Image 1 (cartoon, one colour):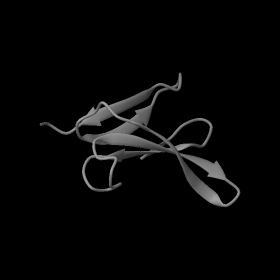
Image 2 (cartoon, helix red, strand yellow):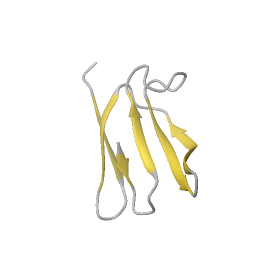
Image 3 (cartoon, one colour):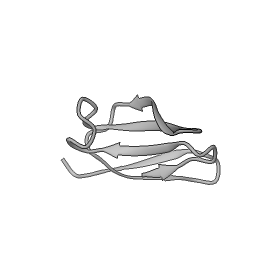
Image 4 (cartoon, helix red, strand yellow):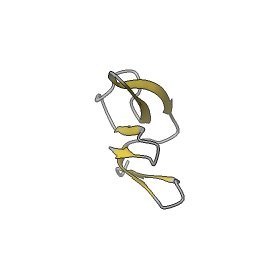
Length: 65
């Protein structure tokens, strides 16, 4: 998991952690009531780690195939 500068939460989904979104990164936005699902990004095989750099770029590490 990682937070961006705006407070959005990004969660790596390497397997069955978020059914239907395996091999993706889900984005959750903050609201007064907590986090709500906003978006997801496919195109990664088995994301394990997430990090943001000082420019706001998201880096994703994959588990070996």
